[in-house]
Length: 111
Length: 115
Image 1 (cartoon, rainbow over the protein chains, first blue to last red):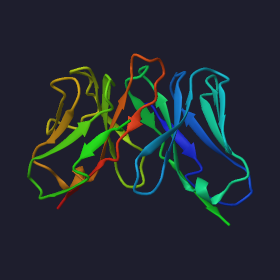
Image 2 (image 1 turned 30 degrees about the vertical axis):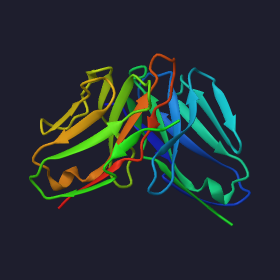
Image 3 (image 1 turned 90 degrees about the vertical axis):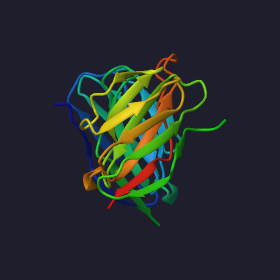
């Protein structure tokens, strides 16, 4: 059974600090997505990672993919309150047809 | 341009009733997806359409759930004999599948509550 596991599931951090969210998955895939979800809202696409070694950065967020280790990371640099949200990774197992999501990491950035 | 539109935004129904949830994808997007999200969980895949046909319906939990996309645009998710366990947020997404590696664009969802 395919599993996508994120850790931590809850993360409380202070503004200005750095942290990394991990996403492990149990099947072969070379396509991984990161989404953000604010409370009561839908999912917003952050990154699409398409190959081994892919790294993408947007503002204070940087995502990477290691397909051999079946691991993706989302690194937060110098966190600010506006980054408070739930972050999901999702693995594409059918090349565009079906995403399997992790449980989500609820991030709270406190002043 | 307009994003993925879902109606209604909220639906409360009694156990045993029939409900229909509607999704209007981004214009020109050929692929349409339905997901279900329970509180505190990640979205769970239900069904995927490529054009008018269901390319993968392996996520539909049982035969009470059915979805259609008759003209390759708007889709309706239909749930018969609703149960309290069906309560969740139903998310629709679309993508431009012809464009390689296109992310899914999600709507705001329909929150279904079965009482």
